[in-house]
Length: 336
Image 1 (cartoon, rainbow, N blue to C red):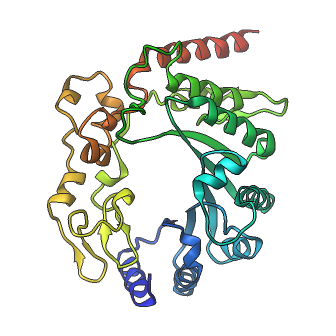
Image 2 (spheres, rainbow, N blue to C red):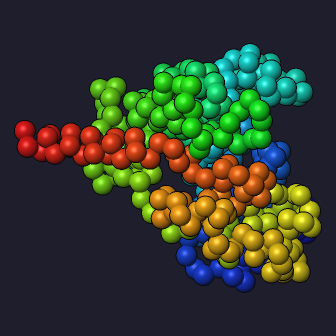
């Protein structure tokens, strides 16, 4: 993003800021390749008294001590999300960085370590292939062994979205497997304490937060199917073009709904994302409708099928049983 566009974004924020805490997410590509723009935004907002905090979605390679110092002191950085797909040389082969850095995987691990030491929250997204969960589970255990003692560290599985004859959507049935891949991954997150609503214990185990039990299993109704459905939420690309979903950034006029300099255009793509109509016709008869509110808009747009559904569509019964068993354990503990 150039500084002229940055000024337009800042002007828009100032004209529309409601005086409450502003949340900014820096996304890419790799946002740390443009740290001078993040500096510019942050200093300008601070100069005019805007209260803000930020989070960063990064590959972690450039999260050096120098960058981290700026992030804490200037950017008001609270959290960094880093995607990691594999361990060691397999990670390096997947990423194929061409900047001459020796062993990028080790560099990312050291950057995570330093960030945690500085009190920055780190969330690692593990992109998981439902057909091959073993590799993702091995990575989770590797990361937990290395960073799990720090309460600012969290890792989670993100099932891969793609159209492939090899990889099926995780929302489908997996009859050939003794345990559904969603449950396989959930069991590991529960065992290590990375489920939402779980509290980390000091003895290597984890304690359930009773109030967060349903949340940890995603057994609660959402107010909306997706943040992109909210009319007042936008993602802004380097040209200042406005998009409803970060996954369509930079795709041009077919997905854009205006520009930060000229304003919002309530065109077809705007109305598509903001519509309360469910993605699929079968949503109207689905028992999970109160939870998912009609599914992921962009996955429906890309795939036109069950990819739009919540990942646990075919294991809802197992999740309810998990909830009942956990609730009974808590009641037993209270009665001891």
